[in-house]
Length: 119
Image (cartoon, rainbow, N blue to C red; front, side, top):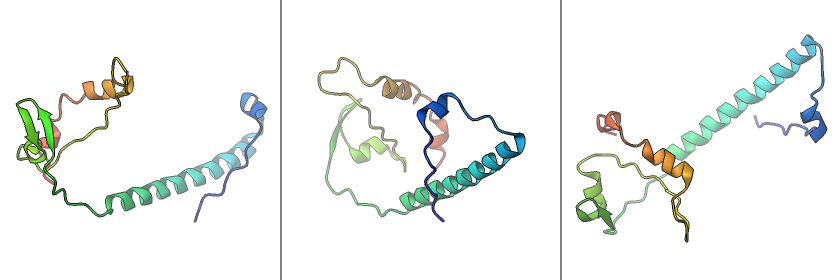
């Protein structure tokens, strides 16, 4: 089942929502709940497909600047089975990185739970 596109109301209706009876509201709310549940099922299905994507073996020896100088991808793993990679946005000519990226990266400090998981 696919979601049907909801008819778009005018902008004025967003600023001044319709006033309806409790029964009419309940019908509309149940309809919306049905659509929300379908969206959740579809999102879960897309997530499952993403997890099932095939992998590509990395054969190239990439070099990275690490705390101890040049390091390979395997060095970055440091014996762990997982590596967190985050795309940090830093545009040409920027004095600083993206504010949202910076905020997120500032909170990468405590990752103790990840070290216990071997997948």
